[in-house]
Image 1: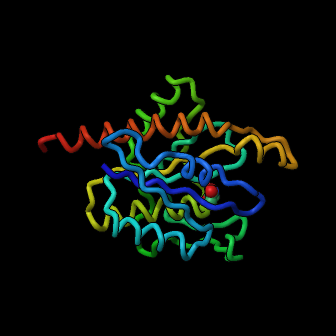
Image 2: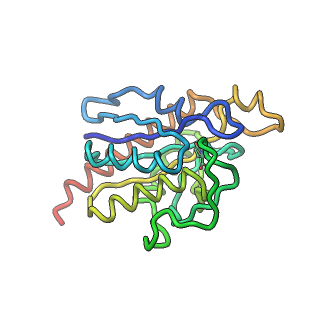
Length: 212
Ligand code: PCA
């Protein structure tokens, strides 16, 4: 089974992007059944959705788990909703600043994550990892990529789960931040990602064995 993982390069005032570090640090196989396809996206509102779409078209993953940094968040935030809205508070890495625009014109207002969000949350908290469900991935690149992934799956009628996870800052980045912000170690994020990917794998296996 192939699971696509995406992270983002650094952006804005964040010299390190925890999502890039996490995706890069994960192995390519989690066990003999789980193969991880890893992709680091530019913080570029034009190229990021194009790149992820091309890779999904080519690779046809069995599931997608996208990651991004949300500096200031206190825990692993499992996003529930992708909104059809771009309203940047800061420019992307090309200097583009977008307000009040749709991700996909005439697309639906929103998509729900199709990851087993409640199960992911319970598995994380049972393992002693701070986590929560989040109602908004913001209106910047993370939400845009999340929405683009969900839209592509919907229009192609692919039967695959996908969703987005926001991460706190890494301690080494928090240590350099002007204001005090919460942080989480890469080790704990790695443990969290492995738990979530395994849970997603189990969910996909369950769905594939469902006779309906
Ligand atoms: N976080 C930003 C974009 C890239 C990233 O890692 C966001 O939350 O939209």
